Image (cartoon, rainbow, N blue to C red; front, side):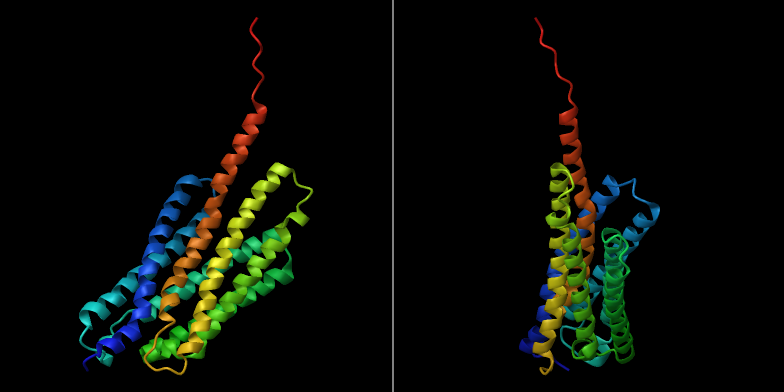
Length: 279
């Protein structure tokens, strides 16, 4: 079947835009990962292993995205037959994306557990939303592995439910961190230490909002394409969402470097001995 050029652009154009943005974000994540490995050798082996495995998942995800658009732009540019599109590795790309999201949300759930003083209710809500998103993602992955049709990815409620649960999880996580680390609750901390804490809080909130906005965009765009056949609008944020989560996690971890250096510099400045006057 020969593809109409306008129809092909409307079908795969949003995803290709998302792929370009995702590739840029992957380069950022790669730089952040190298920075983390070099600057935090003292982190526990479990954390370093977790970060490495999550980054490897994102590397596989990026490789699969490259494969998808190689097939679309090169191998299948004159055909959208089932035999051709069935060769696209988009099923694995979707699976990898949901694993990455779940891994990062588990990382944040651990941080919420620590920041809230082991509050079981709040941490349980975060874990429940992360699990709900992951389960919906696995159901979606199983569905598209079975049918191997792109329409089942972009026109099923499981995709929207997974994105909605992810957005809620991010909102609860970011709101919880802000609530427990807001200045009104940290007045007993020294002013200098509080300024460093506020900087970490700012990075945490910004990165949480970043992943929240991507997940929300995915859920909202689903409504615009639900009744329109051949329009894959959610492919744009869908390609970006995995990179948004891993960049969010690495940025939060790497923010410790600048904060600690400034704190150390301030401490050293206070501890400088007074130079005696030479008569």
